[in-house]
Length: 164
Image 1 (spheres, rainbow, N blue to C red):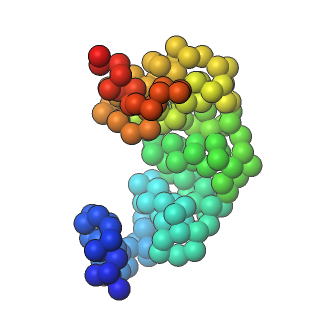
Image 2: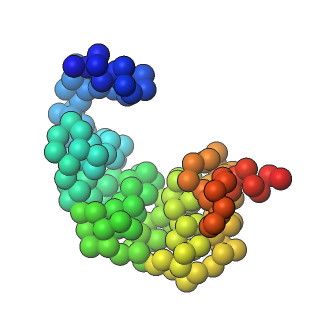
């Protein structure tokens, strides 16, 4: 089964799948998360969020991302922001999502800066501000983020466009 999956997905995912089964990662992540390891909480949250290796559970993922965010993990705050933005596991709340993206962006999470830029671009949870959106997209680019940073109506990466 693992070999069949490995042929269809990237090598790093294949290694991750093998390691998860071999080392009983879930149990270790739960132990580490309960012990205050915010990174473990995010990793465990991702498993619930994406439904692997167990049933998808947005509520549980949200709780774990919240725990990670409370522990100072920027990725946890960013992922929690996505949950609030999309209304997965919690009631949709654009303002809360923007606050979480801001917190994560301030801590150096480039994806959160990009997501916050989109919130400003569309005026979701914050007052629409195109110049602030562009600044946040630029910040994300400066942090090395290339994916998902788009100017509205233009199907090119903001990072590529702004360097011209």
